[in-house]
Amino acid sequence: MALYDPKSLKAEEFISHEEILDTLAYAEAHKNDRELIDKILEKARPKKNGAGYTCAGLSHREASVLLSADDPEIGRRIEEIAEEIKLAFYGTRIVIFAPLYLSNYCVNGCTYCPYHAKNKCIPRKKLTQEEVAREVVALQDMGHKRLAIEAGEDPKNNPIEYILECINTIYSVKHKNGAIRRVNVNIAATTVENYRKLKEAGIGTYILFQETYHKESYLELHPTGPKHDYDYHTEAMDRAMEGGIDDVGLGVLFGLERYKYEFAGLLMHAEHLEAVHGVGPHTISVPRLKRASDIDPTQFDNGIDDDTFAKITACIRLAVPYTGIIISTRESEKVRTRLLNLGVSQVSGASRTSVGGYSSEEREHDTEQFDVSDTRTLDEVVCWLMEQGHIPSFCTACYREGRTGDRFMSLCKTGQIANCCHPNALMTLAEYLTDYASEKTKSVGRALIERELNNIPNEKAQKIARENVRAIYEEDRRDFRF
Image (cartoon, rainbow, N blue to C red; front, side, top):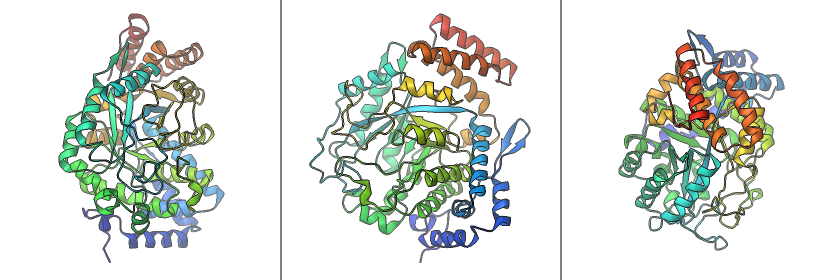
């Protein structure tokens, strides 16, 4: 039996099966312990500290107690504190991005993904560099500035050299006032050397979903291909950080295993990164299993309802207060609206999950990785966010100014990041409104920007931001950043 050790570099020790089982038993035994729960909730609540806030976060065991608590009043308090934490550290800003699928060639046998090697129903496709450029132009014409590139695992069709070439192409395309300023990468676990190459190529965050932390289930769900190696996959973030990538993104695919097990494993992984590297995950994604070609989610019996999904998201915000929580277009407008107030800080917009989907006039379904539930345009998403009281942000300044890894986290933990993020969000929104927005969205957005400029606390920063917004509107100038 492997001993639990968050500082270990061995997957079986920092994601200890025995520790998760003990945690679940502890949570079940204490789910009605009001005295303990009150202490945990008070620990999670953000505390005012000078100009900013501090937040203790929660251990995987403490957060699991909250997740297990079935008293509706406790659930309401969890949601209230989740919103308090989100507002304390991220304000009302919501970062917007889009996925870009490069290739669906894959050698793995993952039973929940339509890209699996034995699926003969899905046409295989890999973008040429000319096609990548066309996709980027289409995304720029919507107004996107931040992408997450996706590709199946196939050493022959999708080698690291192909990924690097695509990144270079993406950054090189400048169309009208458009530019992709940050490329995040979601590709298979790889070597330290390859992670170093990705870092040198200028990527933002390296994202890798664990899918499931339950090793026995993981091996069954990934019966063939290099992804079958649980340890290699689970230890990927340590190799990425060794390769110089200091912003990494975690996630599980809820619906494959029991959600309380996955929740505990996810938080243990975050604790491990903090313990070993001094910085936790830059983002945590919360995807749920969805229907796709050759995949029926009802074949898996661990699906979660919307209420449980919302509680999981809120508890993640309490446990890991400084991480960005991502909700994709897998979820409906209704679900996304609800989760925006429970800690979510990043959303995708106008996503197409097919290879080459953005440059096609009609939405293609035959090469989609999963069904998209929220099919609204980017303009509709931007307007929706503003009408819900949020500030859509296309900002990429932290990555480009070197505010990554422990530097970003230290600014976030002291509340100083808002001095950069708030004006940057307003300036990038002004760019979007000027270059891409409908008249309705432009009207709503300009009024929001004028109101929010008044909320920049630093007088000098407010003056600079006002002048920069004016220059965007009147002088066709772009790319200001704090």
